[in-house]
Image (cartoon, rainbow, N blue to C red; front, side):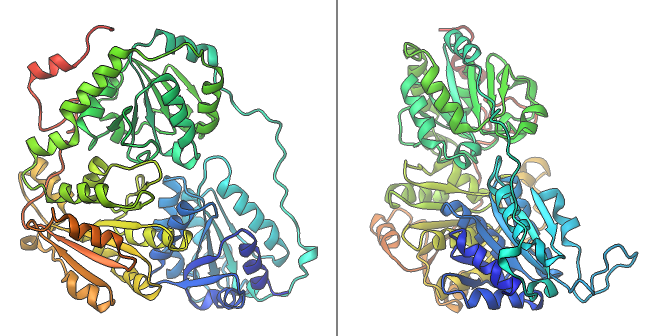
Length: 584
């Protein structure tokens, strides 16, 4: 049996039907073997970065692990952004790269390169992978595949990379003689929450809240979070990466927190006296730069599956434990005193703050160009109950995160740690393949991210994927413009037409890829029938939202201000009334 045939069979046995990649000389054996396996399909993309993001989307969209493949040299290096993205956002993805023949590889020779397109991809990606290995012995192929898959999905998930020389790929092996990987058997010493401490903190608390992060989603703890919140009546806020972990049409949902969070959520969190921070690393985008002021009047219970996030955190916490988010919530549901119930005064306060400082009120008071937010309102209103939203980077990301109302069976997918523009459309493609086109998928991008990922549009029409691409075209790199206006005295260098940033004709681009195009303007953004028709369609579509004025995201937390003190500022008198000085 040829090694490449064995690899194809192995991937098939992992319940992964699609492999995303760009063919090149160093992976022709692998692609040939995949093409001859009737249970696998090689999706030939048009840039390796598309392959990496699509594989991430595939992992997010189903229980299988996504696979991306590229040739040696430039093919492998074009995967790096996606590899790092999967690493920072804890996504299990298997990356397979081809390499020059072992007899061409330089190994430890003090030369730059020996074989054509030879690149030491392992050394390059080691800091952003859970495991990266160069397989230069054919008898190790089973061992390394099994090990890579095991590592990718265990603990805190993440990407792995397997680099395989061409002569190894074409080698003949006896599959029955291959070395098997046997994970180290560990005595069950999984951390358990100290129920006594948590019960004590909860009993003393008058204003508890749950901060749900991305680890709740990756740990499949949504239902457990919901059960815990509802059982004890504890309100929930989410981080950007935790958006979608709790139904946002529920009375106990208080919004998204952070630098671009909802004003109501930041106020509520700042007034809490106990936060369950679960599956979140409490980064600066969540706490603000005034770390000393974060939860200054309350206790923090911090839960993360990654022990290093617990041990090396910048934020002072009162109790921290490294464990799975689902196990944590389930333990509390089973062991916390049934008689505990959150103060009705606190719930009433949360509802009051939410009614007065919600995102709709924010837009009414502080946003002149409301079109992007109107789009999010229409998508929230008319998208399918099981829709998946894939959101790019920039102002579009924050318009969506602040305003989309994600329901129980819907999903919100974006990139948080690496945050590469051009993410949304390839990720949406991966999700579409993962669910066999059975879900409504909406990719939201700005004009910048759309242009970066243009080549991926070919896949939409080629495979007739029912993805709706919503492009918020304000003819600028809006997030940086807002930053430049705030901190650089309106010097909008490299971000607008007059300073060298141009936007292609999106209608003509859509036509060139044979995709239906619809334009939305200020006069049609509220056309409910138009939005219904768009979202009911089963065809791929590009919806360009034409915005002729400068856009801003509101609210926004400025540097060296406390989490609740978002801009545009509210008066000191009003702030004094909403900040709780004494316990209920």
